[in-house]
Length: 332
Image (tube, rainbow, N blue to C red; front, side, top):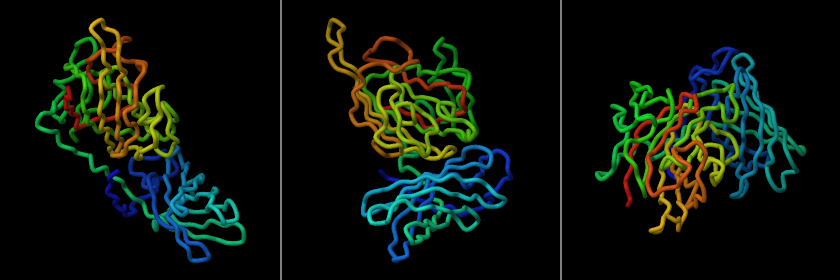
């Protein structure tokens, strides 16, 4: 997995006690060190999830000799500070779970973890992961499906022109129903980029939901799953078939990538299926499915029957998900 890690300078953090806005700089990924009384330092990471109003949740991970232990804390905005409290397991020989207390302010995310007669201190800096595949240029043989200039390659399933919103930043925004490509594909490599909205008050399937249906039949879920366990109906999941190996999601409002290699199902001369479809998916550069067999269709596609060819479908689930830089390379 290739990422560039960019420290974020803290700016205007606090926007009042109302709903979390797009400029919220508490939400996101943080990284730094936990230093114990013995002077030993370990890497500590936090994924801070905005949960609406003045509420946050921080999923913590601590490196202990190459393995990771986890914890979680809840945060509330109090004036110009977001205060967190929770627990963390520092690992073997630590005397058990420690009580974590911390805060995010203009100096970063810092605090203590106290337990078993000792107190460790931590200091984290906000980071932004930028997948190396963002902005990937299509090979000469590729079919460009969306480059920000128009929707001529797409239509609604009834054949009407695609009615999604074209944005000034070169993306398109979900609206007015599912869209499918006018062209069908068999074996194919797919590149696309997506961005989920910040819907802090929403939970589960109501939080930035869309989907990429390969061949119009097999859905790779698009969802704001930042800070959650990997699930088959979470971001990167093959809906109702397979959870991703890991949750590689970035925070909402950041551009993310899917790179998909798809092998269509095989059929004999009588039309009987001889081999299942297979799929490999990289999410933000990380392999989350590797040659995964697809024994059946996922719900909501273009057909109830499998086929050697089909279009790419992007799902309208009534959330303002955005897509850009979509191209495919036929492999058959």
